[in-house]
Image 1 (cartoon, rainbow, N blue to C red):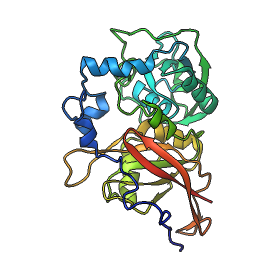
Image 2 (cartoon, rainbow, N blue to C red):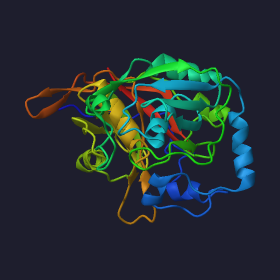
Image 3 (spheres, rainbow, N blue to C red):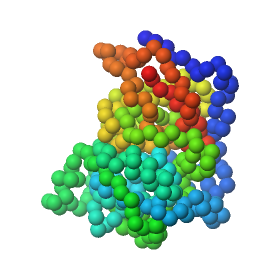
Length: 328
């Protein structure tokens, strides 16, 4: 069994100088009171009017609306769609169409983000993103589609320059609102040029990079997160050697891309409790450039190569930055 090598000795003792804990960034101006894991899943924290005006300036470019077809009409909601789209640009607003089941409109931060989404997500298959709601209205014509194990996304440019605010959105099958704003959501990853430049755009793959998880998190605990969200868990987990005691990171390998995309939609930004901490860690997920993390040899996880390449690229989400590790 080979050992993972650490990053180059030229790296400083603290390679993540901008790293902050969850409670530190929540305590900043405009975030109001820190919110719990349950509160986090229900929506964005309260913000001040000045903070809203400041962030909304990033979402005023026309021609940044796209159409998303082929969504699971029973399980998909605005937050799950945000979890996927935010990997390719800032998300401003999401609106589901009542007249066309399984269709949503998404206003991104700019036209470039729309192009990224179309280029990387069009014709991508998505597995089940959770359990079906216990109560929902279904008919014969839609029952087969609701029971499908995967759905193919189709993305296209919209003619609308903006999405108008919906004051009274209708409820989706899971009772969440069909329209949500994300202008003030701190999980947007392209809020300024410095943040945007550190994101590496990757198409969907069966291997995910995870970061901002508890420093002592175990493989079993990570797998349990996906089970708790009723999605197929990864078949392999690899924790990177820790460079900081503040958080952990690593790779997750799924059976195929379809399962990995569903996992991103369901579990990106999932809250993970950690003993001895006041606030939960918010796990960040993104697609990895690694195309084969490992192979199975009986019951032993074997690396495909004896070397670990540390690429000179950085994954980032808000104030979190981590080197991208790629298996050769």
